[in-house]
Length: 234
Image (cartoon, rainbow, N blue to C red; front, side, top):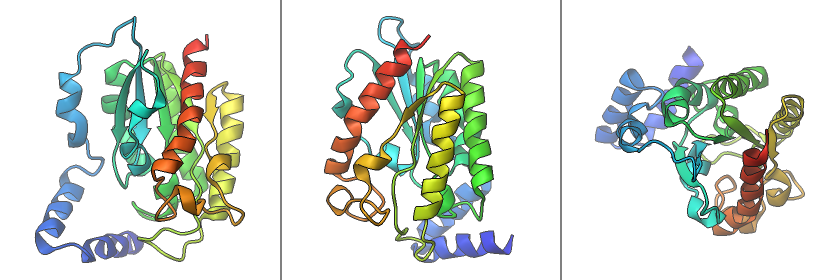
């Protein structure tokens, strides 16, 4: 509890007072940020059988991704990324922001903010359990799953000193094996983005964590092929 309080205090410390008050209120009343897409979800029409819906679930790495660049005009792409989110938050909103939208496929890119401790200390086992739970909910609702590798990072600018690179490798090893075991499509972005030290290639991320235009350009063909494979799966 102390570690979580300290983390929240640190995150709030850089905010102006009005923003700090708003963030404290959000943490108290809407920890998983269910309000973020609630109204937009309700305005979405039912998906078309002729144009399958694909939901991209994730954090800022997804939220900042212009999905029109994937070149998947034959499907409906829905972005449900929320900056800063961790897998327990995504698990809470999975039914609202994925299942209720009745997609054919969900693309899950998650885990780096867990390793950064955004919602407090965690373990690889806890992250794996949350990812497994999302997969199980998706499959129970006949939604095909694209499970993504965690993107490389040597450090997190908002929480320096954690040295996440080895844990990212370990988590990706588990995700790859789990995807193979459960016959999921695995979207492996990591090799296209990583440098010799286990961090993000400097030309593909301006801050070492978030892809820039070049980074997303490297990811897009991988995502496109992964979505097509998931749609073709029986």
